[in-house]
Length: 389
Image 1 (cartoon, rainbow, N blue to C red):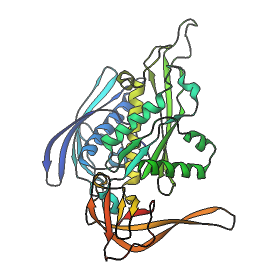
Image 2 (cartoon, one colour; image 1 turned 180 degrees about the vertical axis):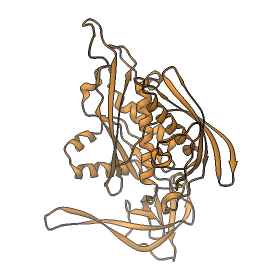
Image 3 (cartoon, rainbow, N blue to C red; image 1 turned 180 degrees about the horizontal axis):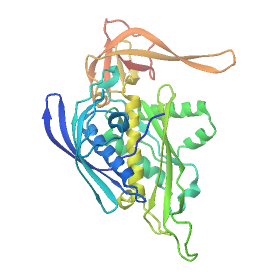
Image 4 (cartoon, rainbow, N blue to C red; image 1 turned 90 degrees about the vertical axis):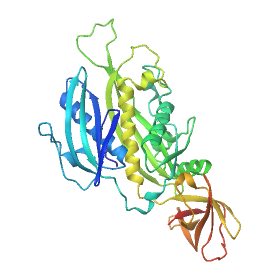
């Protein structure tokens, strides 16, 4: 399970560079909820740090890991094996219902030693689904599932260093029903089918387990007046391997926020007004945290693709320049197979073709590879899997 952290804010300004890294001045902010300035301060600091990391290509598992939750006067600094080498608090203030901080941070570019770090696999995103449709009645937010998936796909494009969105599905997919039935074989089939139809290496689906709204104040409310509302959300994300069908990991985010709309108002969840409301901002920021979690989980995954044509002398595959594949890369072909175990259950297995291939020609979404030693490619057929070595 990923570790997810809350953050809010939008501004980022590079200021100078040193040999060991770059200095960034970042501004973060967070709303002050129920008068809790300390919580808002911590979230604003997290955001300012994360913004610098986002630009510099660094990574850190959590802010607590680096700063230990301590600020001394107007200055803070720490040592870490991560990308942040030094930071200092330049200024902070509370303005109305928000707390703002400005940090100056020295960030060393993150250099990954993973074999798969040079490549960028593709992901297919399914529309998010709502477990309890009755939760969407308040505000008439029945389209929150597709609207949130669309926003999430934009966040992947903006913030992910290890993925690009190949396709965003539309219409109900029935994934929540599969999860509710705990049907692993059907979930696996779903992932493989979606990935094959849309040329994706990974498949992401999401489920809202909670979107309920409740009065902010339970006492002293006149019966003829509608009280202001708070709204909860709990969103779970499911990451699946499109070739094996395996469920690689799940992650959940949960939050509540003030509902900034009238009690009987029909809210357009595709509007900027919704996404700039407190609830929309909270949901968007937590989804951005999920994007960082995806990157962390997949940063060392090997790049995979499918054979789309084979003629014995060469193969055509469904990955190319968009995946950062280059001529000269070496490939291995895997043949899909399987067997039935003693209990009668079908077990999938992969058979490695002994012939190693080299990529010769690369195009935007495809590539051509040929055997390195001139051997014949026996038994290779469409839908066989290739792994970039």
